[in-house]
Image (cartoon, rainbow, N blue to C red; front, side, top):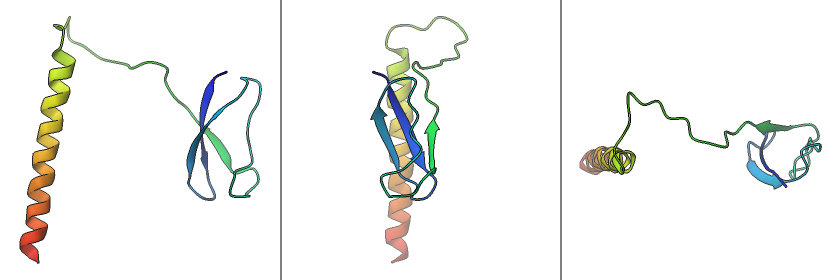
Length: 84
């Protein structure tokens, strides 16, 4: 059975449900009726490349991006602590 992601407009919760492709949920667990919207999802990752990549290139880029994000977050947190 396929897995679908839904979002409730009333409580803003996201959740996943397994059901038939012909079924469609409309009522949320929070009790609101007709508030569920199915969230579109891609079954694959879309990648735009300028040419063939070497093995491990995507992983290396991900690691470098993550390191930059961590360093930026550290600087932001240090700045917040300095303000105290």
